[in-house]
Length: 167
Image 1: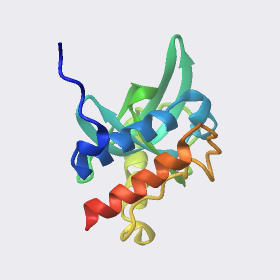
Image 2: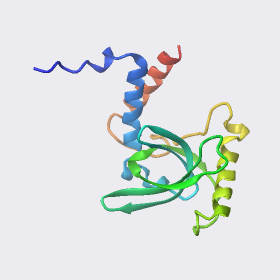
Image 3: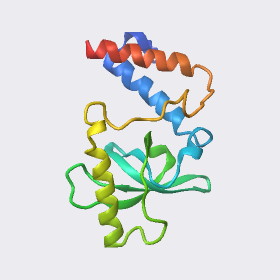
Image 4: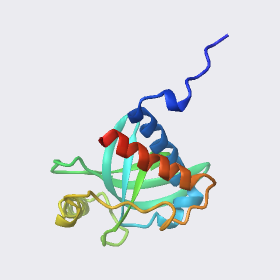
């Protein structure tokens, strides 16, 4: 018989924290929880496979059968250029409180648009307000109004584990 999985409490605190954060991310990325925040210009953090792509600018979100698709402008922190990529909603990592003002929908892949998107993204990344604390994220309970069972306990567990890992 296979060995029983180790209880979560037996895992090291950094691993427990990673698991709890992933549980929260999956909750936030559910269409019913995030679709009203998927507005053009909103900063979203993306991941593709094992690659953390960091913050990007959401250009569009559409329900494409069977799942939601988002188009996001992404660029490495030190990049001189970025690109527009399509992702399934499951690649969404975090949603920011920050929503940028970008040009109306049109040719988001023209060189001029890409340059303007990169300039806007870098302005937010390098903004003095976010230097110490990072780009602010939407609070799942207070701002996103997620009413999922166990959300309060999950957020409390994450806060406790963050303190343990930081200590």
